[in-house]
Image (cartoon, rainbow, N blue to C red; front, side):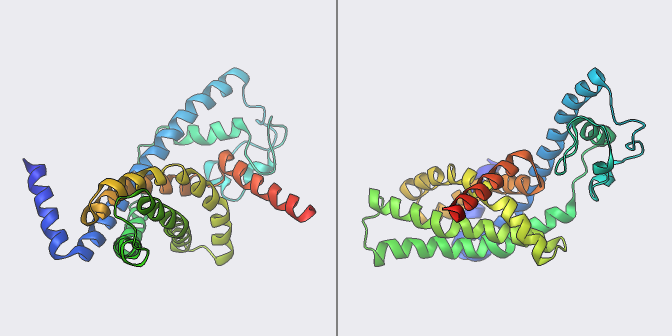
Amino acid sequence: MKLLRLWKWYQDCLAVHPVKTQIISSGLIWGFGDICAQTITHTTAKRHHQIGRGEEEGGGWEGEGDGCSGVTAEDTVDGSWRRCRGVLGATASSPPMQITSLFIKQDEDKELKINWRRVATTSLFGFGFVGPVGHFWYEGLDRLIRHRLQLQPKSFRFVAAKVAIDGIIFGPLDLLVFFSYMGFSTGKSVAQVKEDVKRDFLPALILEGGIWPIVQVVNFRFIPVRYQLLYVNFFCLLDSSFLSWVEQQQDAPWKQWFTSFLALKEKEGQGG
């Protein structure tokens, strides 16, 4: 009953104040999505600790007494772990397994603490970009396909054209703005933001490219135009969780694979 009243209230707000409603709902959804992302990241770290503990108990920490004692989790920021010698698996770009397990172990007893500043930052992205830009994008896209291209609504060409234009233009733009905004909001320089975008953009674009076209086919084919934004906002809850999680992963191995693959292709192109 409460859900029905909430749905009716949302419909009324959407009818009277469509832009404001989308701005507010988008901000709230993206903020909640970031909370989910932080929760997922915290849970994943605990699971990794269980694996790291097994490695540590089985083989011990070879770095003790060899320049690694006293290294804390905070030292990962300035790369202090790189000064540890004689630890199996140490490289110039990633901490060894034993040290990684040590860092996780130091935080294992900590309860989840939501970074509310990050939540507010992510919410502002929903308020300032997703809500207003998304509203006018989908309204304008529908008018473009109907009146300029004059395609029959809900036909195969109609849906395919919408999905293609949305995926080629709005999808990459959304990712680019998100990662740039999140970088600048934390005080990073232009050079640092460029590196973050280079690291995060391609993996996110590829992963989302396999999901959003399916979501949008259903949206453009079966959902009335006045509710398409609500439908998209629902999936933006999942999308905001995913993007926030991707951004928090920093130099995860799976990201390094994407970026190294791209660099290899660039070298092959230059060599040819």
